Every structure is written in C-alpha cells, then in structure tokens.
Image (cartoon, rainbow, N blue to C red; front, side, top):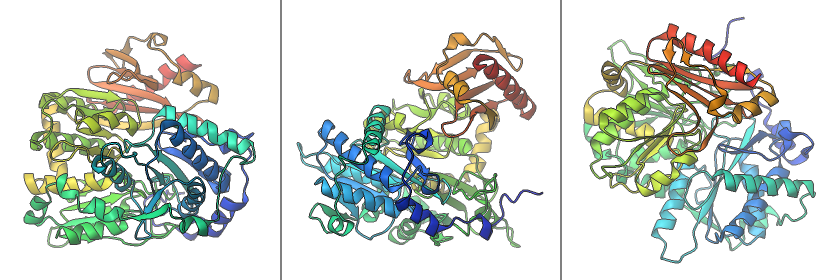
Length: 553
C-alpha cells in the first residue's frame, strides 16, 4: 500500500477528544508500569491520557512537587503559566491552577484567555526578573505543551527564573517527589476547586502577547522587512502562535498573511507525517506539505510569498519555506542564520561564541571557523544554551530539530527557550537585508565549505542495550577508522562543556556519527553526516550501526 505521508488526515486518523478528556480525569496511573510514572525528558513530562501517562493525578503531583521545589530554592515571586492548543493542555493547566492557588502561589495567566507560545513565556519571565527592583522575588513559569507531538499527547514543563528549561537536577527532584506523591495516593497535594482557584487573589492576568510582540524590534530589524516589502506567509499549524502572527503583521505593519488561522484539537487539516501520524513537526516535508504546495510557482513564475514559515504547537520550532528551495533542512537554515547574525549584529559581544548541539551539522563548525568565532558543542537539550544566552557570551544557540534562539540587537538576552517565531521572522530579515533567500545563501555556504549530506535512522535495541549505550566511555570503542577515514575523535562527553552526551559520537575529517538511546522506544538513534556524498553517508551509517551493536552487545 502506498504511503499516505503528506496527504490530508482522514477521519480514522483523528483522536476521539471526548475519550481523551474523559481518560484524563478517570484513569489512574499504575505506578508499577515505568511508562505510567512521572518522567522528565529534555522537554518536560509528556504522555497521553489514553496510555495512562498524562492524567490528572500526574499533573496534581507534578505541580505540588514544583511548589515544594520553589520553596527549597527560595523562589517566591509570581509563576507565569501558559498552554498550547493540544486538547489536554487546558485541563492540565486548570489542574495546576487548583494546586497553585491552594498553596498560595501568585500565578499570572493569559489576560486574553488564549494560548501562550513557549518563547512568550520565557520572554515574560526574563523581562519581569530584569525589570524588577533589586531584592524583588524572582519569577518562574510552567508551559503546558507536548510541543509538536500528536493530538492525543500532553506535556508539562517547568522553567525556573532563568527562563529556560529546567536542568537535570531540578527535573530529577521534581519527578522523584511527584512519584512519591502518586505512591501516597496524592496525600500531601493541596488543592482547591477550579472556580476558587480562578477567583483567588493570587491568580492574576498578564498580557503575554503584547509583552512579546511589542518588544520584537529590540531583537529583529523589522524596519528592513517592512521597507523591503517582504511578503510573508505564516502558518501557525493550529498552534499557540495563531493570534501572535496576526498581531505581528498589524502592529509592525508587515506584509504578512496568516495562512491558516484554524485551531482544531484533532488537527484534522494537517497532512500526515512520514509515519502516517498527525504530528505538527514544521521541519518535516510531509507535515508541511500544504505550506510547501502554497509556495509552488504560479503561472507568472512567482510564488505567493517571498518567505513562508511554519511553527509547531507551542511555537518553539520553526520551518522555513522559500520559493527556490522549498522547505529548508533545519541544519541548513541554522548555518545561514549563524553566518548572517554574526556578520550583522554589531551590538553583540565580539567574543560571543556559536552554540550548537553535537548532533547538528558540521557545516556550522566550518561557518563558525570562517567567522573567526569559537564553537561550543553541547549535548542534546536547549537547557545547555541558557548560561551563554543570559550572559551574552553565547549569543546564539541552535539544535538540529529546528529549535534556536539568539540575543537582542544590543547583545542582551531575548529568550532562553527555543523561539520558532523569532527564527521564522529572521528569515524575512535575511531576505530583506541581503536580497537573497536563505536557501540561496545556503548554496553560497556550500560552495565555500562543502555540501554535507545528513540523516537520522533508528536501530533496534533492548532496554539493557540502551542503558549500556548511555554509559559508554571512549575507551570502549576500539575502532580506528570509519568509512575509510581515520577516526579523529571518540566522544562520550560534549567538548563544549564536558557534560555527558548519554551516548557516543565518532568523528573523522569529512564525516561523523552520533548514537543516542531513545527515551520512549526500544531503539537507539543514529545521526550521521558526510561531506563526501550520499554513498559515503550510507557507508558511515552501516559501519556506525555495526560498531555500536558490537559495543553494546
């Protein structure tokens, strides 16, 4: 049967919203099943009520644990809370409000009763803490989102006062305490009825949208975009950025069209992803098929927009579509963004480094070297970029999964969480200032530095094998060559900060691979890249799998 990837979802692909919401309140997790316990990955606790992994009990316990964590850390300022458009996000936010109000925590919720993109919440935390008088208690926040995950999923993420994702020490403590509360039948969880929580003196309103949208000129050259008349097509993909894009166009007088303002918790308008699932992945050609089609050239030889962009459900990821290049590979766009920003941000620290995750393309390494900038390579997870963005020493941080942020034009911090709206608008600034599309600029970079071929594949692995992979040391790898080239580095720690990468990276002059265990499936992921073409990449992948299988057997 032919794949339906890239085609519009059919009725049988849609989640039953009533069943999903009923399960959120009715299903009690079985803590004997590890999949039903609280577990924080790189982006918070995620799961589905239909799988007993994201239910009311989980959220009540996690919120109480966050309250107690705040107390231990001396965090007594307001807590900003926002949600995306997933069906489970509103009931989860309500559950959290019941616990926060009962504990006397001052909470700031969206003044418009709308959706809050992850970057808008990070921006709000940082702005509050920066503008508060000395000695004022610091603010933090909760984002209720599973990001680009399917419609049946829910997610819950804690952002401490630095505005970015919580580090491992924080999430480990919160998860452990939440599971203790679940094991004790939620004894120890304080809670009031929702109506009381909404009307509590401690529950207050905050205009996330205005705070974020009105501050955009401090981080982007919107005058250049406006004056050049760049035609922008912005697709919120049914996510939290839906109202933001319209306001951005109107308030800053940009030639901007919101391509699809529909919000539907089933995401019935979406085209199916590569595995025929509904997933709001703006880096996937299959999920972005509708927007890509809109950018096809008309009879006059022109596309509808100069730049088209997509965002996932919480708008922390970006997808860039150009008339000449279609949907850009996230690695390609990161390279272009870095090259442009470090050449055009005179207000940045001249010594600021370039931050990337270790599974991002090595063309970024070559671009950074061409700029005369130090490259800092960190493990997977945006939390590793937080210190640099805060200090200005790392003015840009990006990862291969289409997530990035960068500092304001004066070098001060904008967000410490991924900002898909920002990176999407940057594509228009690049087009306006350079007169070329980001994809045309990427071609120029490959002419200078070579054209890499990049891919990610999965390989089967048991839980024991995944555990072994996550604990490897470089000395466990005895191979000296990879795909015909001498191995120049075997890494189990990130060279940028010495943190464990939870896997293995092997590097040669013209290629590399990285292997990391999946947190949710019985597979490990192999990221690989070659500057010597597709055939060489295939050889790298084959030898990588054989090497890793031999080490973890």
